[in-house]
Length: 209
Image (cartoon, rainbow, N blue to C red; front, side):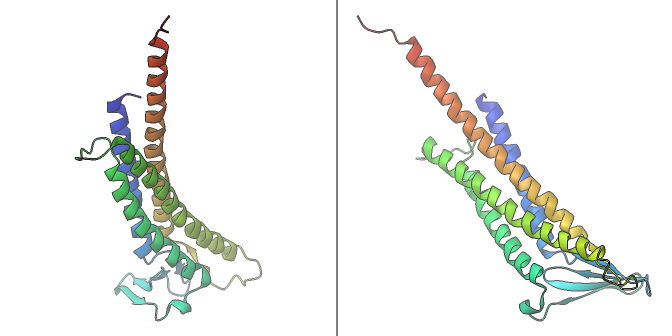
């Protein structure tokens, strides 16, 4: 892989990771992890997120209320709040570290070996950040689907459905992991290119008789 192509691949990886980080942040604060549409009042939609619950009305607009206590949340929402918030913080840190390891960033007194180490650390942290989002989002979606198709619950009881925030979390986690993978792939390609160069130089050396 030539230098220009590696630079472009690193920039694409960083941009995808940044987009994924924005989506995961949106997933964290959107009050629409799951929604409930009551048959008795079709003009009203109940939504629930990690930080607040809202009532969306066609006439009166949207009214939201923060949760009074962290312990009042369901178990999966308590753990999801911790994991997704940790993912947002770790994602920001990994973006900063990865940007410092880009080949196109020229810094004085910075060795190439140090930049590779920063890129490696940033790519690994991006992977961890993406997993920290995908696990709680998938867990909440699994519980919603299980409760929706639970035959023991009477049909007259309204069912919660998957909200838009979960899709934001899925796409965000995927983009973060994909961006981190691209950054790590450029690192491995540069190492293999260096090894090929060393091998070629050794082959050109003629033994002294």
